[in-house]
Image (cartoon, rainbow, N blue to C red; front, side, top):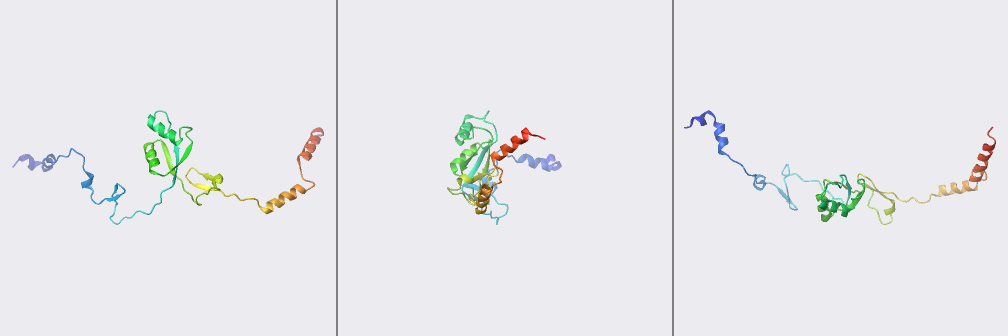
Length: 180
């Protein structure tokens, strides 16, 4: 028997194993679940993800400058309308074509899903819609005239001693001419 193997058994076993190539994950990880072309490896076998409803729209804002980017990234930014000021944003649909474009420029933009906490706006609500920076789309409904306010306005207009423009001008002129 070799004296080197008796003195240092770890050294002899380390020399016999060679691994120069990359491991094949297909054979290394076996209990993966396929989900639309992506293999997912849950931590426990009975793990279930919570149901998630994807956002219909994305708010996309450019966070990096245009200068120094390749022409294909600048073209995508221009097509999305993000070639102006850095604070400008755009709203895009959550469809595979737009997702592929956003994936190519993900290092240049900030993507926020648009949520509707009080319901989606209708065609009449478009003028009263606010999109916040965190992606919340709020609809401020038109309240219309309130009867008590209309009555108070009419009472004010009919008062004989109200301060109108002519009375204020006359009073200011008299104070200017006679300050004491």
